[in-house]
Length: 591
Image (cartoon, rainbow, N blue to C red; front, side, top):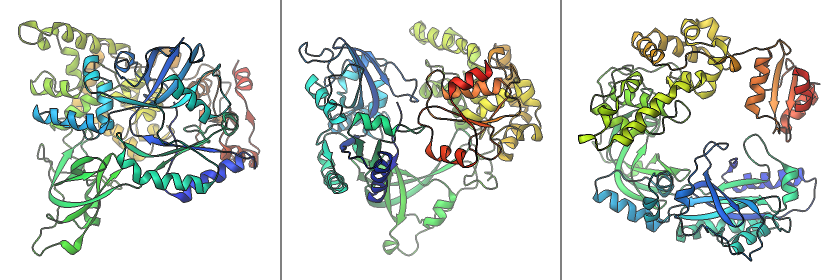
């Protein structure tokens, strides 16, 4: 499931319209305008009219199976009418939402129970759908709107608009006020109407989606690596409110970055009550020239994250004190540092600052790292407060009796936690490197480091020159890696992880070169493939001695191109006479 490219004004909508026109070489086309609902993306599969599977978007390729929970949502039919004319099997995609009424009721219940409030309906819907208890999901009364129908045997008229009307006939909720537009004026009229009227809708919306109506034309226009060329999302301008700044507090993140937070008089903004907003860093505070007591303008970035965007200085009174960024960590008292070229201040006390310790453990257990599903932030905090864990290696020392509750009342869940931790010994080395939480080392960089050095020992011994040879690694990342492995405490933790059986080297099947057939060749991978994924092709290039590069230059050996290769890359390759080969030719090349 790909995401949509965003646009924020009519000028960009006009550019999209023109790109479609150019892509269709002047052929007439229609645009379907729909509401963009602000919820959790879902894919529903039906076989013989019965709902058989519901999966969240996840990372676009792999999501969570939430079928049991989705079955409790009344607006999603479990069995379609037998005479509705649907095919044997089809997929329909859409959004799971929490209506405003349900959201406000939920937050009142949480406030009464002294539980943290949800920031917005989207977060509430997401948290609800991932719950282990289907009865809880049913109680919170989620809703669903569907926006795209897929299948080989859909009895269609060849249009997206027609498909949605079919879906509505079968019993699905579709976009309210959906409109077929032939001109830019039609689109602008639709946007202007819903920019106002959306505030009367029962669910949260954050924009308009524009899609080419003809399915044939959609296929012709194709996709970029991240989004379809035949659709775009228009985001409404963020709603703004003015309120009083009472205090600035400071949060410490997993990497020690200090984030200032504005604490304000409560104000209604985009359907929710806002009391706190991010100020990002010291430079933003200085640019805004903030004083305690100022009347500040607050917006929601993407209608989700509140941020302070300005100050009404005409209301500033004499004697109000300017906001001065702190110099010591608010959690552990260490002197803050600022890396040259970085906007943020950091607490350097990474192994003894509580938020950093807990944040590193939360990162370690996260889905893209060690993926310990039986643990979450609240559990990590509980174990930390009880002295059960102080670093990531402590997880492997946890015994069932340590966490099974008074009189062993939680033995089943405790065993699940312990088993989940033990199972991480099968997690590949690339993800172990990412899970360590080395500052500036993201998922992609961790893979590159793992494949270049092949073992933790080699990575720990790598010098500056060795690290700089890795594609995408500059001096900032290299210094961070070296600094991480200089720490005796970090080395002790890694040693304990190794003793517990955590993978400390690449498996032979993914460990670098298997042939030299692409030795010395720099390859650009572009487009959509059928036999392997892009990442699999990149790995094959490395295993055969080649080097993956992100952009085309005179040094590029060839482009491995799938369907819908990026037009700019195609143009540049042709201009520089760079060979373009398809996947069949490539697979034959490496046999």
